[in-house]
Length: 554
Image 1: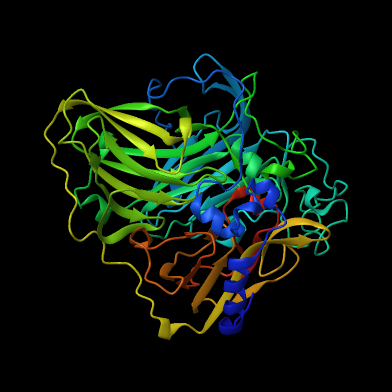
Image 2: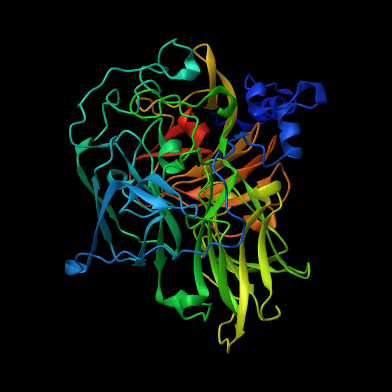
């Protein structure tokens, strides 16, 4: 981590070009190709890790109906605050037809129930933990006070969980102990963090939601165990709405669909397969060696259903797309039965509406990114099908889902030329400083890890301190694929490797997908709230293996 970009940036660029990672074998890339790991991955953009193969028979694509997650109703709306209750519990659900799969859930469903709220109207969600392990809830993309942001050591302990537990060394450290006096190796307990706020059984999370209307999502953020907890089912959507957006005339009602895309794999008993070193997820974090770069599944789920199909009208549809995969990247394309490609009209990004629509022929989406997209089915023959394809996939992972056009209807929706005029216009001249951060693999205590600025995560260390209201420019440098997420704030992408941003970088984001060997400059204002926050890679396996850093807003 540095505030002197020139010297460090030359070094980082050189490292990205020539670095041979210690996890080369885990990535499954052969040095004999003559390419660096970064260059090799740039030619195989979906190869962020090893792929698990399901041992149970899988259904054919486009047979299972698309489920729509239930919208959670508040238990109280008094005092200008909407109050919700969610119980985190184990459940056995049918994901593959005829097969029961044990899951960890929010409220007994996968995905968890959708929360719909209004801009500026606070929400409190009381989470009760009836799972066998501690949990933490993070509202991804929320402008949230630090006490409710879901810091990884602010645990909610289940009944009977000991207040403290013996530390186990992280497997990436080969038994050489913990780093930084208590990062990984705490077994996710957080007891080595003097600032941790640990509660038993229940915790209230309060979200002011004083932010632009958008699609957020909530998920587990427990230290060292985020990846397997999300994989087991702890994820759900949260939509923020307001009057101005609703007045635009965008597709709404049944013509608005939330689509949570996630890959998984299943063992012979129908359970979710995951290469955890400790299947109980109680004390020993980490995955088997070949999955250190990320875990990929061979089944593509949308809203918890494998390769689903949805019946649509010949009209415009607004698709609220979330990549909730641990490590898999997608490049989405809409293709009709006749081979014709439909336009993907992007109207929003992670943090809400764009200033104006951007039309794509295909749209890349990294883990944790969200895109608000309109597809017009009006020109598609009745009875025919439009497939959503992943251009980065192969075999079964090339298909995502399908729409079957069923009927002609009157469509009064529209996509206006001007969508929003409230996007921040921070200027580089306003920035009080420029910082640089490298995201790369490295050695830590004799083993392999994923580092920011050469350091693995340590909750007891302060990495970056910013003043409330200050504008900063950050330069992010990657070795391989890293979707970088900032808590609390949204940002604008200024450039990629010294060139203009890509078309899908438009708007206000909270996660930027760095490609192998790439750098990106972002600009943001650290407003909202004081306190301790995070920034990290949202490849969830990278995150669990050290690729997080502390951000203090003072």
